[in-house]
Image (tube, rainbow, N blue to C red; front, side):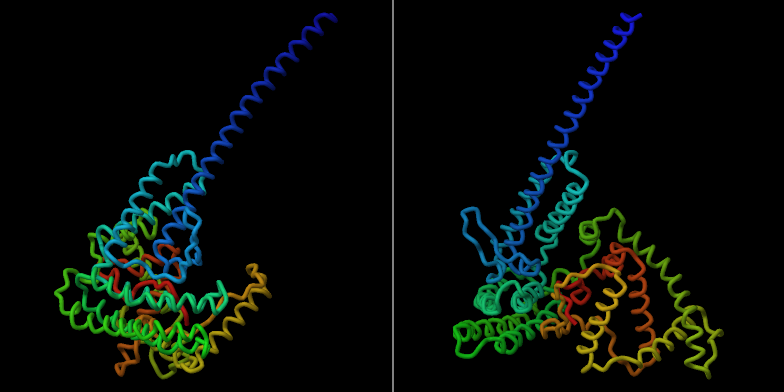
Amino acid sequence: MRCCRMFTLLALLVIGTLASAQEGKVSDAKSKKQVLRTAQAKDFSELADRFMKESLALSPVNASQAGYHKHALPGGRVIELDALLDDYSEHGFEEKRQFYRQWQTTFHGVDRNKLNPEEDADWQIIDDNISLSLLDLQRVEKYKHNPTIYVEDIGNALFLPMTQAYASKEVRLGHVLARVGEIPTAVKQAKTVLVDADPIFVSTAIEENDGNVDLIETTLKEEIPAASPLAEKYAAVAPSAIQALQDFSQWLKDDLGKRPPSRTWRLGKEFYPDKFRYVLETPVTPEQILADAERELKEVRAEMLRLAMPMHKQMYPDHSDHGDLPSHERENLVVGEVLERISDDHVQPDQLFNQVNSDLAGITQFIRQKNIVGLSDRHNLKVIPTPVFMRHLLRGGFPQRSAARAQRRSRILGDTHRARHAEGRSRVQAAGVQQLRPEVAEHPRSHARPLHPV
């Protein structure tokens, strides 16, 4: 009996040892696989980091906006990106084309099966970003047909360092002046590559360029300390930059503006579906989102009428409920009358800036009191007046007062529909609804701008 027990015990020991060894092999395999996956992810992260930094270095103005201020070259030399403008020559655009083609090949060589979900999502974002850039550089070639690119880049190039706190004010103003010194070259390059342009692009660029001149003549000059090295630098570079900008506006009017345009400001069906896919990173088509938006618009309009009816009765006791009108006209009239009355109670233009600052303080306090989200002690959110070179862009998005009251109501109602619908949709759809139809894509006054000051 004792022998039997010893044999059983020995057998169990052997089985346990074998099982432990097997578990060890499985564990080692999992460990090796995890180490390999981690190494792959690390390699991809380094690759993605290189791509991001090198792509920003190719566009110093975008780098300033992204907060990437210094770029280290392989040899160790460091470039102050905030002191440079983009290269707008044909050679510069060809360099970008080659850059994105090479990186596209590199990323397509990555084995996505070995990336973790986060890295794989980053891969897709990068691939769409590269595809979007190549779409613009190789097919749309916007840089040949849209002068607002150069005018807006110059304006942002000067404005961004003046409003960001990445360095001392003296250093930042030095960067701005360095960019001012490059304006004559940038304008010359723009004239070389521009082929033709839709009239709306020409008129928009001229308006924006007036703002750039004012930015140098007024805003920048006021920031320069008198009798300082910066003042000497300003005196050396500002006159030629201003002259170059003024000459560019004249050239836009007398030369480019008189060339027959080969295309309109619309992207059209040839390019818009691809841009839509790369920007929104969704398989949903513009037609699908448009159909969805139009379907939900009916629900939104019905809800607006329901909310407006009791207010309409209170605000206009001598009015009927307009039930004799067709459904669409009734919605427009009732909701329009309510919005008309609500719009009478608003801050005056000269008080808007202070009111927005007050609202911001109140919102911040409310968030802290209710502990809605955690807020750090940093105070880097600024409310600033809209720069002159951007004001006409924002002005173009708001309806002006009209003597025809019915027209005004219709515009207000339409704007409210769009705003309300955008609030209720996902980020993807809200972004897409703004430019659903190819025939309205790429209008200069419908763009989402990199800066959104008040």
